[in-house]
Length: 138
Image (cartoon, rainbow, N blue to C red; front, side, top):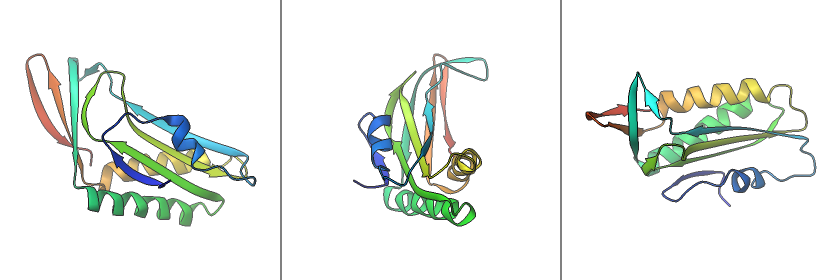
């Protein structure tokens, strides 16, 4: 299974975590980003995500490499981002990091989600009852 993916179908957190199975791993730390029901005081009806897939996969892999370079104890990084129309409560992204111990995985995970928002070519359209707006994940 791939460690970095852009998908249209719902994401299974267990599936993403399972990609990091390794007897040397004692910790898998995850971030699960879900569609929230309000943004800036406005009720969200749904989100639409679009990506430039080839570039998005390349930059997701880049983020994984940066994490491992900065935190050498991180054994593997898996990132799966969903595109298409997502309802409130649905999972948009799962990031999972594996390591022998948990200590630095939290800092590494924080770095990964921030970096994804900075450089990965993924855009979302927030749709409210009274309008919509395209925003960059960056």
